[in-house]
Length: 328
Image 1 (cartoon, rainbow, N blue to C red):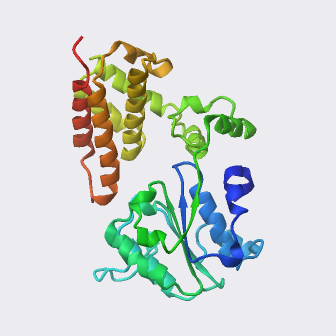
Image 2 (tube, one colour):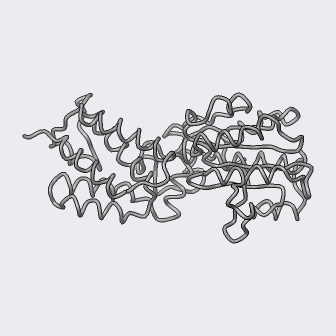
Image 3 (cartoon, rainbow, N blue to C red):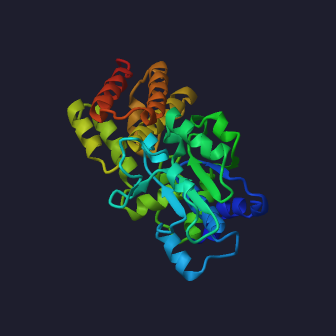
């Protein structure tokens, strides 16, 4: 890892007092800002027993996420069994599935290092039961154990967890600084305006590298064809389902589109570029606002339910969107 490459992360890292580091850490910040990079950099410092670097063997183990004293829990959703061993589970380490539970991992003494670290990515996806199970490890930590959590939805974590952790907040980066960083690192064919307004540097780099840089434009094109009756609702849902992205990303795209649409209507500013074709439509501002509220509620509930029928949800919101258009 080279945290110096990300100056906004390096600034935070250099301010950390490793001589008095708490056993619980929360890193807040938007998706794509580099929370995982910062979390792993802090973890590496702890695993090295707070030295400047790891020896080559330990560095190799750490870089491959195979260090016996480091556990990276990186899942879209985190369940109770990920935090604490369940009775029906015959063992808490599954080499084939690649997971173990946090509490059992921290109970074992360190193997190589003097410390053990668990990094929980997307900690905001834990439900209340999972958070409660984690609390004891935060309330009564072993001298060698550290828990680092990342979240994009800070209000989803219980206050009792916050009270036992040091919090590092990574703020949004302006479009100007994003463009400056992209150019500095040799990305000149794209700028922040080619992506949703919430896209942070690592979102943009990931989309470019995975050839998904046109996915947002494709999404808007599907919505445009649907609202202009060029495709029916069933076709629109099929095309959206076929997009190579997870469900939450699709919901985020829809929220982004609706916010831009609503802002243009409230400010009487004409839309341009990708959105220009929507200028001819008259939308109900109240209806659009209500859809945004419902979508935000859905994003919150997504992490608290075991499963969601994505097609059913998309069908509902496509119907609502169509009904938001006023008759000319």
